[in-house]
Length: 102
Image (tube, rainbow, N blue to C red):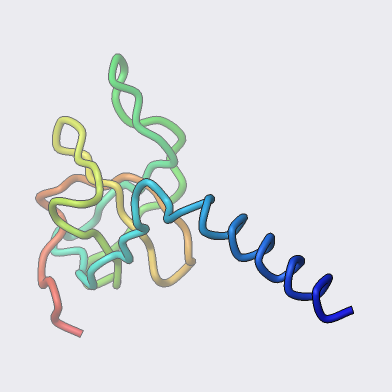
């Protein structure tokens, strides 16, 4: 019985090692705030037509997240996490500021 258990453990361990690490680590959003009076928050960004699917308008001081250099920015539209509602979208990059302020 011990031999079978050792073989099963060795096989399972080899399978886990063969999977390896993910190709790219997930980067949590860096804390920031909306610094514009208002900022449209869109569900998606299309390279040919721009932002699509208005979700809502964020106001000055809303707590959001965007990690500079890790999360995409397309033609000035930054992938952003709204900490208030807990969803992702796109907002104008110049409306993001106050990084690490809270």
